[in-house]
Amino acid sequence: MKYFEIEFRIEGAGECLQDARDILAAMAGEAGFETFEDTDSGLKGYVQTELFDEECLNNSLADFPFEHVTIGYEKREAEYRDWNEQWEQEGFEPIVVDNLCVIHDGRHLPEDMTDSMTAVEIDAKMAFGTGTHETTRMIVGELASIDLTGKTLLDCGCGTGILGIVALKRGAESVTGYDIDEWSVDNTRHNAVINRVDERYTALLGDAKILDSVEGKFDIVVANINRNILLNDMPRFAEKLKAGGTLLLSGFYTADAESLKEKAASLSLSFVKGKSDNDWTMVSLLMPYC
Image (cartoon, rainbow, N blue to C red; front, side, top):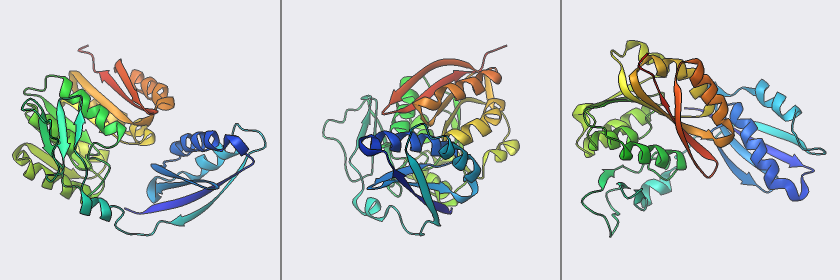
């Protein structure tokens, strides 16, 4: 998929530069941005070309809450390259989540791994989706803490397939996942094979519209995507959730949790609990029986 690289210049912030960066990142997230990195003069952000809402960004910058701070930006198409070449070559250190699940690359295993831990091998072709990110870890931890025996799960934006694979290896009956990126779908299928769960994992290429062709409803729906997509696609998630089913959402900042909970309430979904890690948040929602 194609991305814009936006370089923001923050002027007049002085000692409050980092605070200005944090607020800017939250505002840019409203315009579709996914990732950021600090620069000497401000912030660099990346957003999918199809999801970039430039009008929203400009309106947010016009209302920036710091007096005497001005923000300008330059937009360019991000250079296409293998963003994770080094990651692929070196792999990653094993990640233990709540002493219940260990995620590894097949080359590095923890010395203190126990038989009670669910081991999931992920072919390290992308950093995001191996468990290094807070949002992935929170959902993995939640899935590992509940009884999944015989459950069906839908993974919206499956990435590497890690969430569905964790569920299958902890007793889920079947998983359906989808992603808009062809590479992600292929990687999910590959990771399902190396974890020997491929016969129970169906990976589809497309966005949330593909759910119109997916039969049946699910016990659990998970979506680890950015805030804007979650708000837009939540009605479809709710339609695919069984009565008494659980919807797990992450991929957004703590400051955005209320807007997602309000959207969920409008769809008759009840808030069960939330969890935060380094300003990232996960919420668990319930579809009532009546």
